[in-house]
Amino acid sequence: MLQFQKAEKNDLGALKPYFAAQRTHLSDFSLGFQFMWNDALRPDYAVAGDCLILREFYTGRYYFHYPLSLSGSEEAETAAIAAIEQYCRDTDTRLHFTNVPRAKLAGLVLRYGQEVSVSNVRRWRDYLYRAEDFKEYPGKRYAGQRNHVNKFLKNNPAWSFRPYTPEDEPAVRAFLKTYEAVQRAKKSFLAEEEMDEVYEILPRFAEFGIVAGLLFSGGKIVAFTAGERCGDTLVVHIEKALRDCEGAYPFVAQQFARAFCGEGVDYLNRMDDAGDGGLRKSKLQYLPCEIVDKYTVIPGRAIDLVSREPVVQTERLTLRRVRDEDEAAYARLASDVGRNRYWGYDWREDCPVADPPARYYLECAREDFKRRREMPLGVYCGKKLVGEAVLHRFGYAGEAEIGVRLLPEEEGKGYACEAVRALTEYAFLKLGAERVEAKCFRENERSRKMLLAAGMRAAGEDETYFYFYRTPAM
Image 1 (cartoon, one colour):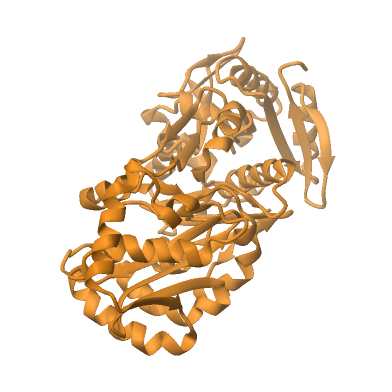
Image 2 (cartoon, one colour):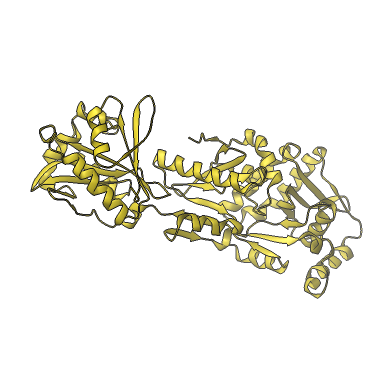
């Protein structure tokens, strides 16, 4: 299983090779972005093969970034996606992909079929520009930028531009103090956070491979900009200029491109607009060659298609939602610690009290279905509750796991085998499942024989379990 660890700010340098090689044109896949938004997004990371997998926690959910292959291998990315799916299944985590590049979207949609939700929020899309356009501002389409540059040159004849060095840090901090009043006046969390992070990342430029430049007028800093090369793109993380210095923004952007967009750097990524209307207008006026899509993809699972618990009928049994009047019998089944050690779950681990009321167990089962964690169905013989059959551990390739447990006085009557057969067929024909799995403890010989009799096929074993599976073709 994937092992995620916190992407602490002090540890981010170890991820540099993945970002330096990436060609997605997404600003999120850069050290500067991950550092500056670390506190807000609280990222984790894992490595699968040669792929970096970032995970962030946002609005109460985990989002997995599209895998970033060091070698650019599509096979490695596919294997990493499978590892993410298995991790989500094993940890009962809903799978949400984020920062899926446009070139990878079709593959994901095809992988998951029609039951997939796709979004592409406008305010988070990056603005991508051709580096050569910024170097010259050519043609009529850039007449406005050239006019601003000419005004700057006219008003600041004693200008100069040079690369930033660590010795410049005190002077840059002083410049930023002059600039930040305007930024903080926006009363925006994003603006405040970005300003704080600019100060914090300054000492890390050399470590992260961030290049920067200073624009002077009469020996005074009037603009400062910094960026990071990621593949064929220079991601611009910081661009600050004094508002009363007319033309400073387009001029410093031009000088920065001329200084640092050398061979192999074909594009500038100037980040998103965060939904700021003025910023969006400005970024569009620089004529992006692409507004870089960042797709969120949420695959569905078989259980997500179901709005209520089904009724499954066999020759002797009915599988259905447990009735309110059977809560005492259900509690006796669910709370039997000795028998349920073969169930693989001890209710005492999650129960807040030592002796819960009978209703507690029924409410837990209904909550599990409401959250689509599993599909628990009471097994009835006539009007009598004799046990429970459950589909759970739903995966993203049409998998589900099945389990059944019976009240002690109802064993030995073939009910478990009949229930497994019926619920497996329901999973195939009604839910569209492609594989139903099961497992039993090695010492539970009765369960092993029952699963084989129900049409399951042996799939292997380990020190704890025997494993089984069945497909629609079997």
